Length: 282
Image 1 (cartoon, helix red, strand yellow):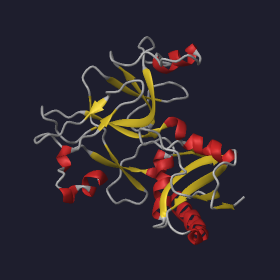
Image 2 (cartoon, one colour; image 1 turned 90 degrees about the vertical axis):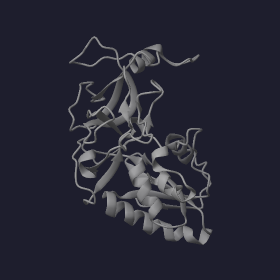
Image 3 (cartoon, one colour; image 1 turned 30 degrees about the vertical axis):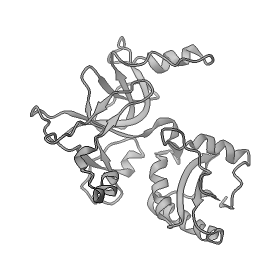
């Protein structure tokens, strides 16, 4: 939606932008073809506090601690999607957040690689539920999400199950026994000051580390620290352990536009970031 608004003045119609979801194990899971007659992707508002407990509770738009999520599109024909507890591997109900598993004839069978454990690949691409459908093979996408029956009618006049993707499983942060998604904290950090060009978060031992790219003068680095710590405390009730202010472009981003938070963490631990300023709150 923000992309459509950004280019609205240039004549880009919001109906020219479609939502889709795919992953390494299956490139085509969901697709929303809007065209001129199809319905707009549905948007729901969920309670962020409940999400931290892996629960999905719908709230009204504008409710405190609410998060807006847009559906990834209609699940494509021949594709089955199920939400699974990644630890117990048991299927979950509609009110739960879990890992997205997919069963489809066009799912990948594995990575082409000259290294790595074959057993790990089999577990990733051909895994089974612990109960329910023990003989069906599923592929694990590595993404967290949930499925909801949409209120909007499709072109056929039928409601459809919409998939809502929340984030990557391996990048979630476990803090104080709750699950946090980096993008939520990073969005708050980026709003803290106009000179913050980009930000990324990760954990070090039990501490939350915030890396902020400074687009302004180095004299502003000291000003960022209290602003960043305050906004994270107020909006997420978390104490920031370390604030690292760096130059623009330090946060690694891959060819798909995804932040490489674990690579950033490795660089931090190896003292390779060459920061402008580092503040410890330990």
